[in-house]
Image (cartoon, rainbow, N blue to C red):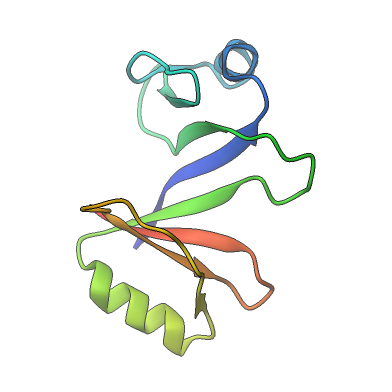
Length: 112
């Protein structure tokens, strides 16, 4: 398993794209929407940075997405290590499962 993306909560997608593309030498993977943008390195490989629009001022507005070829097996393994399932309303055909680490921090396991 590997980290596939860091999902970062921001209040202004356009401003965040402008900052993070310059700060990290990243580029948009595809055109941003009003509430979502995906950034990847300009050159070579690297961890994807996904920007998600949030309205909360509270901390923990970001989480990791873990990409895997065997989601069910990895979810079970992580639960055995101490993760818990987070209550979540999934859209139809969701390719992710939301879990929490032992400290309660959310992360997703995404079917690659």
